[in-house]
Length: 522
Image (tube, rainbow, N blue to C red):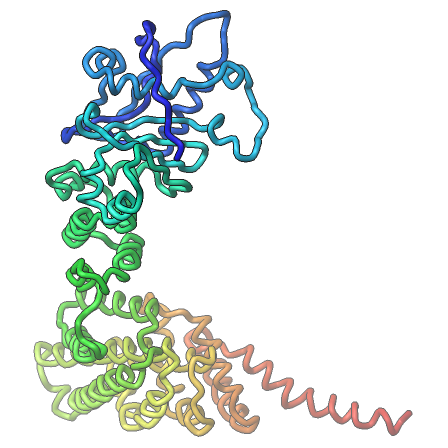
């Protein structure tokens, strides 16, 4: 195996280039980051060029750890072994120094390597050299102790036991030289976990990967303990889970980490979903209910929860809630339209009107969830059969009832967008029962409901009408025309649907007759 030659220190030791290596409180040296290595190489290449015979100046050391960096002068006097190792960096031929852009030649690694030496523990007692060949021509020579490596690393123990006593080893194509050196340095620490404190999650994952590769079990356990305690969310969460999931088969105890993101329950948390829906629907605090409705709706959209394998269970929960809201709403409508209700005081009326608005808002939220999940077909049937609720609708003040019309509008939008496919009878019944109440509330919806989108609703109504047979289109649109000519903008503008119906009724028959008569005339 190839071993780096260590030259003796000459009289000009004070001119040694200072390699950016930091010393830690534990007494081992850590390799700098790749960016620091590249910067150092660039500076050294520039200094290698002769400028008027002047001697290259020594560069300042860069510390990449929290501990201070030892200067080149101090190392030259107090630790000659370390200084001698660092001098290996400038061991290159004059031809190499004078060539600004040497041509790329295959297998010329010894000439193009940027060599860095790292020492651990008591260097005078080291009995093994490990050379790491990394990316961009970086080579790191580590002066280590074979007993330390064999005790902590099953990989090193296996390599050293297979061969006769050797003085050097090589690790070609090392993917992460910086972390490899730091991981070996952790073998010299009494408390590796303490050393990892304040490190970033991505760096810990890199250390974990190298420690697992080396069979450094103590370090792997320390990394897992760190990951179990430190916060991580978003992209970090996905990286942590993917990095530790395969360790479940070993004895590393990764379950505390994975329990943060997945439960021991084998079935979906159906009861939890039901409980969340019930809590939101029963809330009496306006701001909290509004914000949680928005959040739950967003989460359902993002995670597509209702189109998973458990779609039937979640849909059943939502439909049960819809049925409860409908029953409560009908009861409140009956109470608010009773003969003796008008004679009651405002203090008694107000809670009923508030409860009507609350139940209608709940129903609108559930409709939004079902429509967005393409699962509102059954609810369209339920809503179109609420004839009594529709008749009572006109007897309530518009301020209290307008959210009921928002439910109707959302169903028309869903049909117009193809989010659900109810039958022809359901579509016609929905228009017959709920279009007029929607038109009665239309002026209020435009000016008193900020979330109401007039253009979207009008397009949905028009497209729903145009899905019916032509005779039904005519009946509904002529009824709309009478209202539109009376109230104008206080009524939905269905001119686009009217135009399509007009062409179907008055233009298409004659075009088809003309096409059929052309062959005879010719």
